Image (cartoon, rainbow, N blue to C red):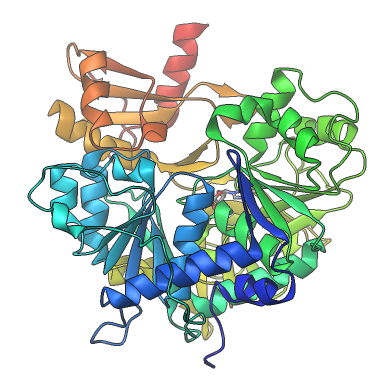
Length: 525
Ligand code: AMP
């Protein structure tokens, strides 16, 4: 693969052509392409000065990013890329145990923290950090044994700064962690060639322009952020970060800033619809709307068409393992029969989709099976998990596929429809959650052997919460949730933990989640 790519290349390019154009705006701060390029180059210079370089086995150095959804986070990841590193977002909302797990898995060369990220540097976390922790804000004055790791960026950058380092196509551009059924998160490794292809392809597909102002609604640890940031910057456009505290005021945010591109999971639009914020033409500045990451209900589309009459709507589908989105439906937005959700469409350029039976053979159109994806956007695999990688990325007929776990059909017109999951993965507000992961931690916290978590209740086809049932006579629900809080991210926490002396089991002796759901429904009815 040729040496001609860097995730920071577009920032570098536009900083030379249009240095004063805005690149990122958020929380009262705004940076131009020129400013972001200088800060990123300065950061890259410091990282190199700290000895961050390719490892002895030829891999890119890995840099962890512990930063809020902010202008600073953009500087951190562009700086890491500029230095020729793999960037790895570490979610800010993670409990200490989870951060320690990620640090142990990643073998990082350095970490970049903003002020919010710095607050998570407890003594245990700092001890587990690599020798270089670069603080984008003020270096915290902490009296801890490992405080010498903390480095503040010098206020003055040197006159001569490096250009973005060139990386190979099979180098890893970024690693994003998703929920893992065993209780340990899975690190999805995305090669630079996949990222480069995705960015160029989707920028063209959506027709993004330098004059666009695009919305960012995601944390860096959700790969939707890759979609929001890099194509916007590829086009030379500006990214506007919606603060987490203003999510319910997103409409006013879009209006005030005159945004032209909306990016979010459908749940956000669904919530805005429910609070009756989607008034006719209230989003008239939008020309492109991207929904993705979870099923798109038809009623959200109808409300959106009225609210954003001049916007094209794209339903983008994809797993993190296939570089954000790999299928798309736009235009008419056909509804999947019997499900009231929009079809996931057809493969985007560079991707291929097929529906397989349990033996890995393609099924006839109209027959349900497991959706599999092939093509340039596939991840190289899961960090440090070759067996899991081999199981989820099998080779069929000489081609490497990713088995998505989604049940799907392709109709006779060639359009793919998602029918749900064949496993126990759910989405909560766009976050991927493996119910077995909650169960694994629940067993450790409660000491019970038989536990079962389910997504419940369901409102208009979307999971609104999680309920965990523990095989025990009685349980202190608040204490169990508090115990889980130390181990799993907030979005995975059950709203309720219920004790039941015996749980329904299926034929293979596993907890029967369908029966648990029916039981919960009956309790309420
Ligand atoms: P993640 O890797 O966290 O983005 O999760 C990927 C999973 O989200 C897919 O395997 C699907 O189950 C679901 N998903 C993503 N996009 C869509 C969509 N447009 N419609 C239906 N489900 C989707």
